[in-house]
Image 1: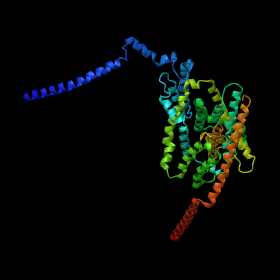
Image 2 (image 1 turned 180 degrees about the horizontal axis):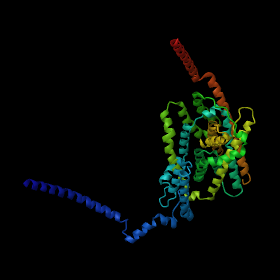
Image 3 (image 1 turned 45 degrees about the vertical axis):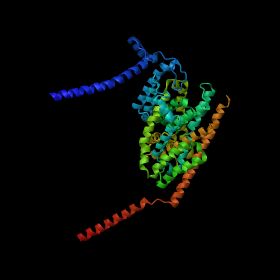
Image 4 (image 1 turned 90 degrees about the vertical axis):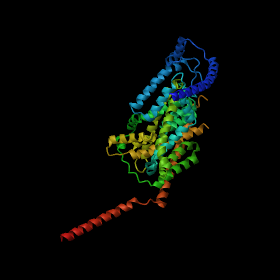
Length: 441
Length: 74
């Protein structure tokens, strides 16, 4: 009993001691909070509710805040703050539907569309300089970092074997770049006619959609016309996904039945050494002819060289899988940040969409026509259906060539033959991009 | 300024397509050159060299088995 009492006493003393110490803290805290309360005015509850209601999204959509600036700190119209955002959010839902239900390049379209959804949220300013989309954009898009990394991954996925075994098909990949420059003329003609006001830089950035190469389009757009990036990227990726719809009618219209049934000679075996020397050779050529194209071609050939070397399987695997996946997420979200209403809901976007599909069609047509021209010369005949694969869109365009070929002759396998112009198209559009950049230096 | 914008576009086109084709043609020439050199000086160890030998082996084995079975029957 005594023992217990002693213990209680000891505890009591301990408590008084600690609470005395704590009391000192409390008084200090009270002073601090009194200091803070000077800035915080107590409000009646009704006013607090009113203030909160003013900060809701519903209110921001209905009564746009006149003070609110866009991602670049510029003025934006009331339409772009209210209904524009709602329309853009509906458009992103439409893009979700395209990606999920229709399978249109979901790997990029989904991140882009979701980025667009986030960029159109009022008040939060996610696409602004300090919002996370803005940070992603500044981290790797405004300095053209992400498209370059994607290019490394694409290089690691590319097999130049079919091109090496039939080098002349590279010409088809060149002809398809006519889509780029044809559209460039179209775009300047449009602004000449007074429909839109595209500068030569903007027209060039739009026309590169015809290269049918996502990373290249983004690379050029951020360099020459960053204000059009959203529309260009969306046009580029959605048309690339629509290659199986856009190309076959053009291919069929330009070829005769006999031409479509041409069988091509089987591809010869390509030695490992050839594949290993090829990336270095192309890079050397790029250095000598057009150094401006070496950021793209250099990254592409770096990835391919790692793959063909056969001694860095881990790096090759990372480039092809984890790295390209991570960067794709960031690239998509960063591009999506440019889907903000004030930048996307402008008349220019409509023209960009129209010019983009023209670029694709012209590229396809000129690839097919080039194959027909090549057949006029002696040598092994080329099936014109593989000409359409000259627009990059690897490997979708090659698959389309194969599919259309099979429609007319079940035994005619064109896939590997079409891969040649397909990968040459990637090199061709990188060269075209280099030319455009060098022209604006 | 206004009038020559389309002309400017055509200039871009000429230079652009010219460069693309020039690049690809040089590339094709180099590719052909490279494969000729590689096939001449660094021929790959022919993988087709072994299968015929195996075929021969099989033939020999078949002949031997046939001979043995013939001998046994005889």
